[in-house]
Image (spheres, rainbow, N blue to C red):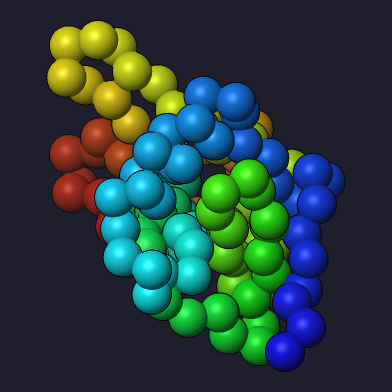
Length: 122
């Protein structure tokens, strides 16, 4: 199976994020193909993003080959992630996380976040 290769125009990871990924991949079993970045509807921006280990690469997935791991993104998610940089921030107090920089404005939401009407799309 040929992989749909992604490049730095699609998605990048900072050196810090790459180092953390390598560390995490050393702790998982060999059946893991890569880390999948996914989008889910919801939140004020209309879309929220997450990452999970994946044991499969599907036909509609793009793959960013990194040193020691792969980042997997399906076509539907890639349209929202193009040009995004993934970073890893460790504030040193046990509060550490991957962050998505350069996200494009999505529209979404309904301009009701924080309103007394309870938000949501009516």
